[in-house]
Amino acid sequence: MKFKVKKIAITAALLMSAVVLASCGKNSSKNYSTTGSGNGNYQGVIQNGRYKTSKARGINVAQNDNQYNQKSFESGLTQVSKRVFSPKSYIFQEGQYLNTSTLQSWLGRKTKKNPNGLNPAQGKKSDPNPEYVQQIEEQDYMTDNGRSMKLKGVVIGVGINSEYNYQRKTDGSSYTKNISKDEMQRQGEIAAQKILTRLRAKKALRNVPIVIALYKQAPDDSLVGGSFFAYSKNNGNRISSWTKLNYKTMVLPKASATNSTTSADSTDNDNFANFKSQIQGFFPNLSGVTAQAQYHNGELSGMHITVTTQFYSQTEITSFTQYIARAAKRYLPSGIPIDIRIQSDSEMQAIVYRDAGSNTFRTHVLDSY
Image (cartoon, rainbow, N blue to C red; front, side, top):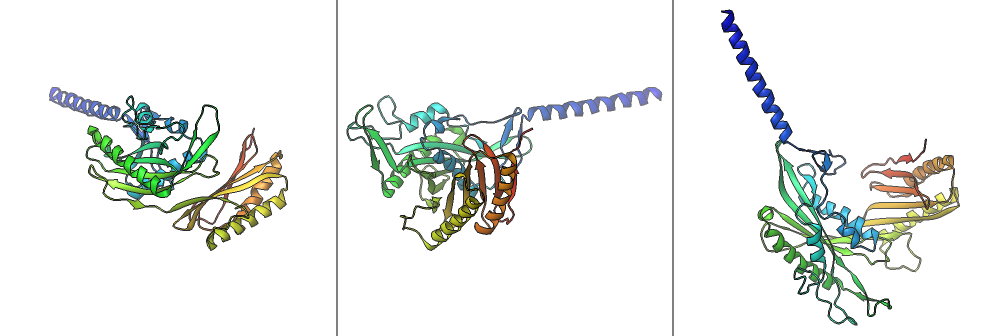
């Protein structure tokens, strides 16, 4: 009887060991996790303890002379993605199907050595054909079934130049060709179809939805970035239709000579001018107070404000930050997301911000120990 009980105990122990080993094997095979999400943002993919970066990381930065274009391009592309792939259902992954060499080839001119170039051959150096396609970015969207990640869609952003700068002679004078809105859209649609065809040739991308969004590049000397003007969701090999987007970004305060404004633009500009006047009255030695204001379908949808200070003490910065929060609540529009960066020429000093739908500004002063 004792032998029988002992035998049962050993068998049970072996079974438990097998379950534990199987469980460990299952967990060790899942080599990914996510960053977590909040405030309507996507979760990101972490693989083997590291954030999974893009295979074309850095290529877009090298293609842009206007830093604002890069920032608005990336953030704007994510907003387009949310129209199709909800952050509640999908996980964001940096692009894994277009690598650096591929994008460098596509962003180049079409030549015998580079048949995949999306931009036309140069033609005459004294009167060259414009380079239309300036930047391309890939975003992947995944689902997690608890055991593995599965690709459920791809979003491609294509930046199209609104003007083309060139030189007729090396180190000579610079010339500019303006690209009309119609031509910019036409060239973007041509490039989009070529990109879709090439992506469908990849086995992993044959049957997933592919969204292609077109972005108008702001000129190199612009104080704001460009904006997306159309996107297309595609389940097949051909682009059949486009959804128009109505975004506009402008700098506040506007120059007094600017008269092509709507009544809403004028009101927003007046409100910002009052805000600027108030904080300059509190601390008159400010180097500058400017804002980037974005409009969607004619309505103000968000503001990024930069306040550049001179050399203030830490206590002055703290008092100034608190005053800015009060002035912002009084003079700036309600209901939209606003962030106010307070900085000197050499460092960030504080930030004041408010999320969409909130009426409360939060502050944080960057202190030192």
